Image (tube, rainbow, N blue to C red):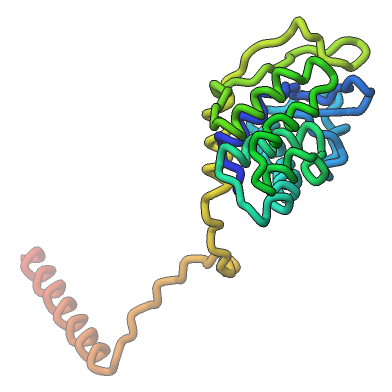
Length: 238
């Protein structure tokens, strides 16, 4: 029962994406894919400040873990497979009721038909019915509904609510897979970093060391040079 790109995308397809903070139907500041400050991540910082899709999705995935923990707890006695987990997580993200829903208790007791029927008890307001049907079909029949896209609202009204006419379909799969790829990568080993050595000035080349034998040879060479100069002078004088 873990969140991966497929699970996160399926849930996101039932929500909507706004890259800057907006007011929901109850006037609560919301951002990204249904995230409020109740998640522990303050979304007011995004008022009038649209963020990159990468950042929106990364925080969304982080926020999902809080809901995933509740789902794992509710089904600890009978762990879910991937499509069941995705459906239950979507249900809980929308309702917050995974711990008290009767369909959960019926399913755990083996009453599959009763659980399937009770799943639709959570169908208010009326506009939530299509979502609940998709979650039900995913949980009980393994029928995924997402094609990798999410509805994104690109403008807000003066009231701070989304402008529904600005809706576009945004493909989030490549970035979502990249988010999970980065998340799954093992952390780099943390080795102590040595302080950089101070810059050294080039050392002066030492003068050659001369011994006693070198001094005698130098003197003899000097005498020979003088004799040669003198002989040259006599020849030129003649």
